[in-house]
Structure formats: C-alpha cells, structure tokens
Length: 264
Image: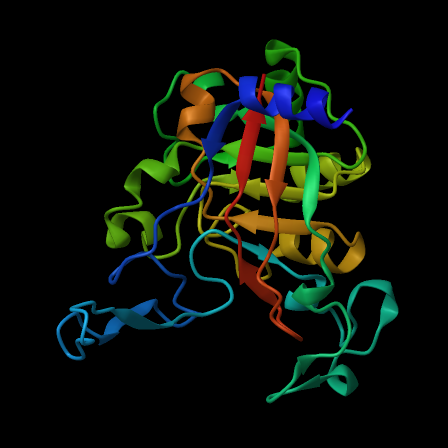
C-alpha cells in the first residue's frame, strides 16, 4: 500500500498554492505587516575551520500572507461557533482557549477549483464583481466539478497576479468575491473550507463581513485567503489533493499555511 501511495505521489503534478513573503508584501490594514531582517550575517562570526552562518528574525500577523482562519477569528453577538462565549475564552497573552488555530488538524482533503475568472473570459475579475450562488453552480457545471462534503473549495478571481504590487492587490479593500448567497451554497455542500486568491474571501468593501460570519460563526467552516491559484487554472486542474497545515500557534485566530495541490 505504501509503495502504491508513493508511486501515485511521484506521478502527481504538484502545484504550490502559497504566495511568497517579502518586505512590502500585501497585508490587510487590520493586520500588521510582514517584517524581516537578518539577525546574523555571514562573516560576523567565523569558526576556526572557516565556516560561518546566517539567520534572520521575522514578525508577521496570523492573517498575513497565505493563511487559514480559525473559527475564533470572528464572533457574533459575543459568541463563537457552537455558542461558545468569546470574551471569557480569550486573553491578550494566551489568545483563544476555544477554536484556536492550533486545534486545526493537518489538512489532507479533496480540493476543487472554481475558476470564475476563466468562466467569464477574464484574466482578472474587476474589483466590483460579485460572485453569487448561481454563478458558482454554472462554473461547477461547465467544469464538470462536483462539490462533496469535506472538500476544500477554492474560488479563482485572478487577483493573485497583483501580489507583487501591494497597493493594487489591497486596492483600498475593494476586491471581487463571493456574496452571502454563494457562501450559503458552499456551506450547504458541507465543505471543510472555502478559499480564494484575494485578501478576504468575500466581496469587498463590506462593513458587516457576512461571509465570514456565516462560514466561521454559523457553520464552523474555515476560510483560506491570499492563495495563488494561477498554475492550477493554467493547467485546468479542477480536482486535486489539497495538503496543508497551519503553524501551531497556541490560541491563534489564524496562521500562515503552505498549501500544495497534487493533481494526477
């Protein structure tokens, strides 16, 4: 069985769905920017044999770069998913004692791509484009994609191509995305997570963030944001194995992930 699994993996096409981290990279203004500096440079300390080493220090928010939202990222009327009280289960030093990102198991699930941009004949959807449930249904039907319980459902807008230009990517918090109706359609399928290539997995601007509230608080469905879905789209890979694990940040409301898609 192990040999068969290894043979399958060797023949699989591996797509890296993570965006690179760099100083000046895009970040939602509600979260701190990514910061990087060498903390030790080559030549500062040289061993008798001539060897030297270098290291760095980094700082970033849990929701910066390609990341997953824990269920504790949002609350509604003081409650997390499952009716858990938010205020009594949080502290500045320890984070969340319930629904922390460290409680998310490593993910090895079926992933599906809903390439909305390609369906609309666009490289990149305009910022004011709203993705509703009917459109997702039409995209899935055209692709021959069936959404099943436990899937990771990824929605492509094409926005990932702006990643190297932080101002254009963040765009004053205006980006294409799903509306509440589309989120309800995904939750009705029983997906484990919904994700996109934008800074927020819903149409922005939005004052109330209904998609986040519905998925995280009402349905207990995770959200993955700032993905790079371009190579999947180029190769028309609409079904694949999705592999990722968040950093085990105790009590965290979110954490970076390095997601991979393995397609046969």
